[in-house]
Image 1 (spheres, rainbow, N blue to C red):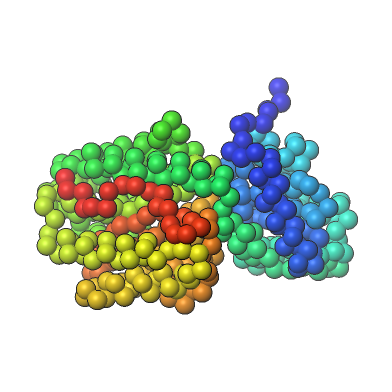
Image 2 (cartoon, rainbow, N blue to C red):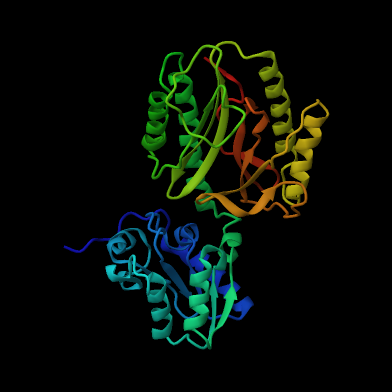
Length: 389
């Protein structure tokens, strides 16, 4: 029995809209096709979320075809048939013989397809930064008459402004994030193993909220004393103790879209130092949210935060956040001094205000927000407080 197409996260018209924008970019760059290898860009253009990018694969967007063609490993092709909006003849599996083959790999199958459709002497875009140097050179070597153009992040920049349908999915992801943060406040207790509490938090991220389950899981960071001076480590084999602080970063996921959220917990009364840092950071957060509107630059946002906290005697070396959506970080706009990207309606960001001060002390708070026509909508709603256990 053949596998059928599953329930789609978005209607066909949404994917056609996105592909139309990509084709406009192809025309601007005078190229005939784009080979998309970035897993998150493939999700954006097709609805495919299965994690098969550990081996070569490519989505070919042709200027002359309404639907793209996806070339991927044979055992992953049924997932693409099930998840992608395209007709099944647009899913081309390549054989297992190309796996762990020192002579040829899946990228050769992509090049074979480009040859089959007559693009060997035309303009072809590739995402160079997502390929190994050897693979990028293979493209040039096997297509000597083609005009190879580096289109790194071309699709990613198109993802920066979301549609209303995307925003609706991000709201669903944000509700899951909020539920997980509140669940953490219930399960972080002295004597409880960090692993056991983490299992409960992750369970919420998967079970979801408001009847919408999490559709994937991005590793969360749980940094407890004395490890609060760092940011990107998971739970340990230790147990929680009285007097400990816990910094937590997590994000609900719906159809590849994330909504990051960070909060700080204190087992017992927070120290005066922690309370003071919290107050300053929240003041900085509120100063940022008050100024968000179209036309403001990412640099303006970052400067507002830094000015606010520095007036109160605190400094932060990290950026304030980043474009946020599919795959967590979208490597485009960054909330840091010097980034002159102007905010536009339906851009979404993780406003990440972690502050790692000493090797054994830091603090974390964040929100996911979208830019509206006149201001800001904060998608995450967990209380902006130190959760005292």
